[in-house]
Image 1: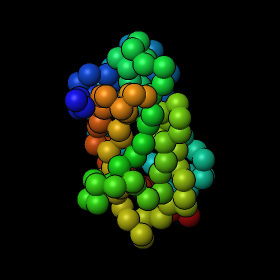
Image 2 (image 1 turned 45 degrees about the horizontal axis):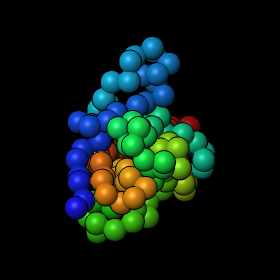
Image 3 (image 1 turned 90 degrees about the horizontal axis):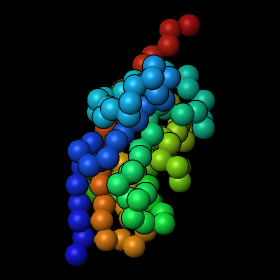
Image 4 (image 1 turned 60 degrees about the horizontal axis):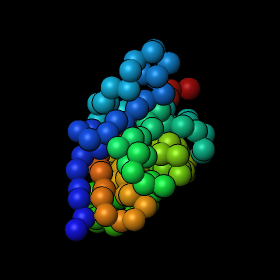
Length: 127
């Protein structure tokens, strides 16, 4: 039987900004901003951490899910094996001003999953 819950309620989403301020792994807001000039590969400042799974399973698999198509997310962001969300493609305010997706953490045996839906707004840089 599969178990599903929100990442925000059962484990922590951590921002590198909060970590640098010395916070104690508090849940984050679900809305973020990033400059349209962010380079491909840059960290967005969102780190998914399924600590509850880390105690029971050898591995946690992270993925981004498209909230409209309910399939794999194909937008300009990606999540790596460590749960760090990064820019995967060039950003442009003229294409889309905000992106919404769900981060899913899946236990290595497939028995449990946690998820959290986020929104990232792209901020225009005036030259």
